[in-house]
Image (cartoon, rainbow, N blue to C red; front, side, top):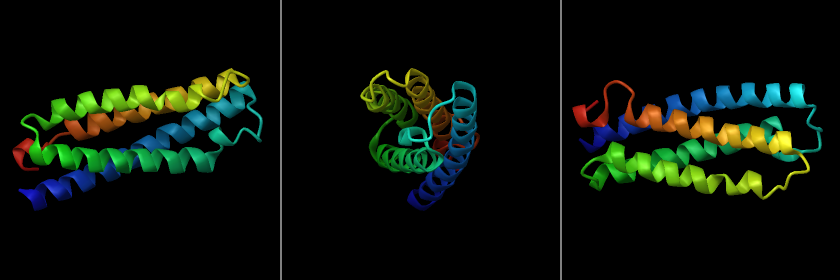
Length: 133
């Protein structure tokens, strides 16, 4: 089961990473274009968005793998952990202040979409870990 689950978590991490990066890049491009966010606002620069999204999704994959090893209901446990992590992650954009309110809101939206994608892919994607897939 570990090998199967490990491959499943790795595959799900890859799917979630690609989906979250694509969504966040689209959000970044729209936010910069619509709200005229300055180029020197590095937190919403394309590189920062892609890199931080990948780091967050990979971290979520590791957390899910650890939870799947020991929790009675890994999907439920992971969902609770993910919601808490999402709420805590909002501290980063909020700490930037509101000089660039549109950028802060865009970053918070990116955090939310990434969390939603990760939870869906890990807990609802067909062929879940419980079924051995």
